[in-house]
Image 1: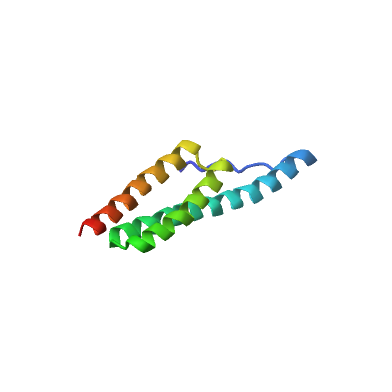
Image 2 (image 1 turned 135 degrees about the vertical axis):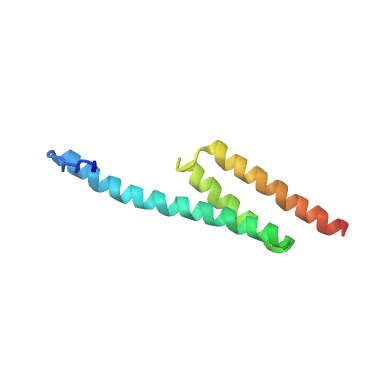
Length: 101
């Protein structure tokens, strides 16, 4: 069974500092990535449930989070724009469907 070789600790002080920084940055990025996905999922659930008011409210909050995460470079700006565009279309379709009904 092949196991992954154990990582060696950096010898230089700058390398050790880099490792400490990487751990903190990785934790922050993971948290923001999770927040992004949660907000997008919440909007999708509201659309699936057919709740126009809740979907519209959550969409506004989701836009803010998506823009923040994209600005930090955690997700690409184009991915953020694509997600916002698709969800905006779903929320708009929901609004027009409920208005027509």
